[in-house]
Image (cartoon, rainbow, N blue to C red; front, side, top):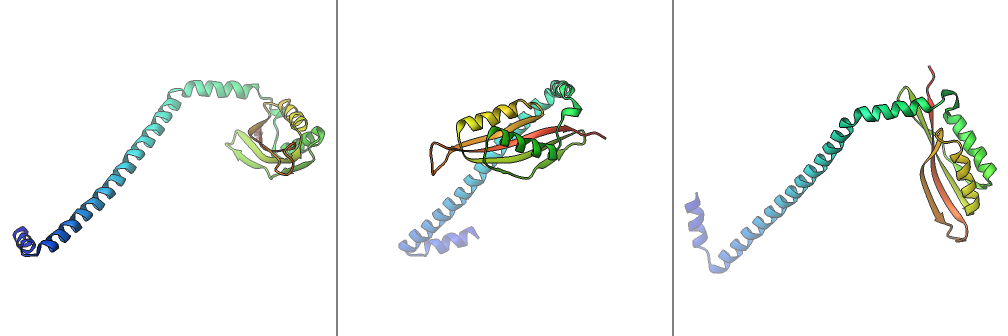
Length: 179
């Protein structure tokens, strides 16, 4: 078969040989490009998997210390002071009103439970407010720590009036589930 192809190739004119050779080179370049892309994806996947395995190994190696720290932290919580989702919403609204936040939008609570503990989270957006009011709200939240805490905090200047601020907070509370 190779002899037949070779004879067919040699029987062509020079410009046809050049065109066929060019097409073969282009096909080989496309193939190598595809192969290089697959190789790069493979190397990236190996890197990501290795990093994930290294992290998991670290967590597993420190399991005893993590369990001890979790037990110690849980022992410091008083079950009667933990807050469920309804009380989280009402307390955050009360703190916002007390701090003087006026343009407040509080989203619905999201609950995650593992059977022993439940974590309740809500989003609070305060628009067109000043720094002192946000600070007063933060101080009120901090006084309820570790039962209420801020997971995420974003602060931007208001586009209409740069002297005012817009704040986005993700606030969470922990509850010891009572059976």
